[in-house]
Image (cartoon, rainbow, N blue to C red; front, side, top):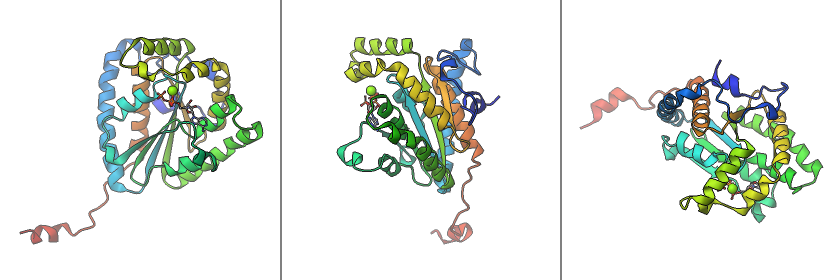
Length: 273
Ligand code: ATP
Ligand code: MG
């Protein structure tokens, strides 16, 4: 079975987030961890080649959406899986609480501006999904407002795919205990305790509400053109491997090709002095 089939929330199918084992490693034996690291390196190298072709082709784009609870590894994933890419063709955008200007527009305004251009890769560290997650959990908008957004998001993502943007959405799913372990480890590590924030502990207290909100976002917005992938993420090596495999599979399937040269190569060869 391909990685995509295995980890995808099948559009329209019965899916229960609570049934996913966050410590699982579907498709890879835990005893083969060191081989997973080798395979990840191969994938990172392959992605660099694929990015180069995407850039040269200059017709299509790739959007990678990352969601997950605090300490689920969104930053770590960007560092490992995207480390081999040419920064010129790739842009990472982190979405924080909206600014006053952003709040004065529709919720997709800031998202639309951050989309990758043709030939590019965009990575969203958090995304428009916050508008049906944190907004729902904290009642930042009336229910009627956030409920309408699922359909709006599906329409928006369809617009993107029809415009040549391949959309990949990953939910990095960690267990509540694993989150506790990671948040505590941050407090103890002088190189990482700058990352500790009170907000993480406040959000953690709403864990079950978040899981309900994720359950709905994942099922209502996993569509054939923009499916969700739920990545068991308690094991960092598995998380990075799985995402790199899905990226690679997807980009290979795009059948990217270098465009033919615009110039008359033979004439140029003759011309050079
Ligand atoms: P890290 O903690 O690793 O730096 P982060 O993404 O958690 O990364 P923070 O600055 O801690 O960054 O948190 C950003 C906060 O902004 C999150 O709590 C997120 O829920 C919130 N946020 C993002 N988008 C929205 C939105 N549309 N409405 C309200 N809050 C939002
Ligand atoms: Mg945070």
